[in-house]
Image (cartoon, rainbow, N blue to C red):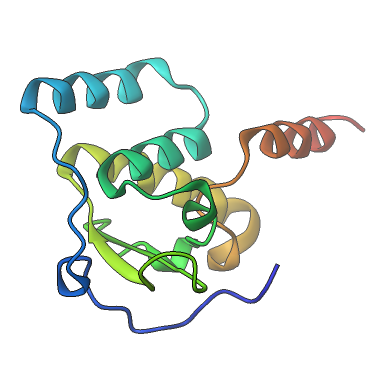
Length: 133
């Protein structure tokens, strides 16, 4: 993996990218399910971010804790020539606590250099390894 991008990326709208808009009832249902039925903070952050950005897994994997705005109102996804370039997306209010939880958990273990979203299977292996003497 390459070092994280440290760009000053434009907003998604500035790149003329507008993710599909969910009907309000669907957005409410998605938010409720993510808040109540998904256990792992990294997985929730990844699913929530995919929901409001329409980003592929490869882009989601580029987001680091430092890419989440201080108040979690924005997140920058990086693009190493895969789609339309690096973009900063607005984070819906319902998703902010989910992304903050993943960032907080990451900061406890790796500081701000760690990825915000990662494969939950690797997270489970990492956590299981840390629980055994």
